[in-house]
Image (cartoon, rainbow, N blue to C red; front, side, top):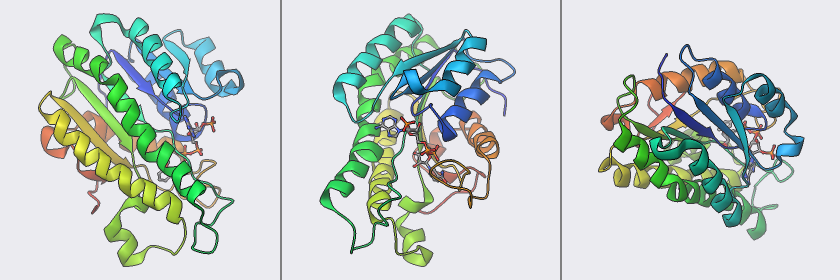
Length: 255
Ligand SMILES: NC(=O)c1ccc[n+]([C@@H]2O[C@H](COP(=O)([O-])OP(=O)(O)OC[C@H]3O[C@@H](n4cnc5c(N)ncnc54)[C@H](OP(=O)(O)O)[C@@H]3O)[C@@H](O)[C@H]2O)c1
């Protein structure tokens, strides 16, 4: 779906879904004036760098969402780039899934559980907390005429975090990842309630089982297909859909 906004930020943009999100923001019929792709190691994010060489509107900022100093520095750099017009869309995409640990009772560790929670849940919440003033600036600016809201937080979620789906049919693995994604869905619901009052929508979206390093070669959809679906949801978000869990197809998922 075609929509136009002035400034967007995608974290975890070095590869996988994050890289494709950046690519498709740049390819919108009316692309944003500013697309910020953040990554843990800008020096080694060669595909993102290549994209930035041919797209002057793409800026790369270092951000490890486990690290509060990084979040502070990334906020300052973003603030300087967006200015008084603020940030219209913040995509919390960065994610961790340790595939060396099956995440069953035999193998799961406290350290592993906390690592997943720190990135997939606490990291996402801390980023929204820090960047909120920039989203509020975008709301005050009223610059987007094609979205139902002036500012939006997109939480890249997962069906693996759905209690109902896991209870019904989930496989007995990924305890660490699933628990962190369940907590992230709760965080998304809570954040959506808090931000409703200030006119910021929160989109919780399961992007599908995608062919990325995380999804692996067995996955059934491409990053392109996933992002196309996510964009339809971004473009059609309303106050009523804020905090609802969707999959990239537009179907609602149970929590
Ligand atoms: N792939 C799937 O089938 C699938 C299904 C459902 C949901 N998801 C969700 O979709 C999102 C993207 O997944 P993906 O498939 O693109 O995964 P991926 O290919 O493994 O890429 C993960 C991205 O997150 C970044 N990242 C990891 N830890 C980070 C941290 N502490 N701070 C900042 N960035 C960090 C990675 O950066 P580095 O390059 O520096 O490691 C990389 O850019 C995740 O939230 C994932 O949970 C994926």
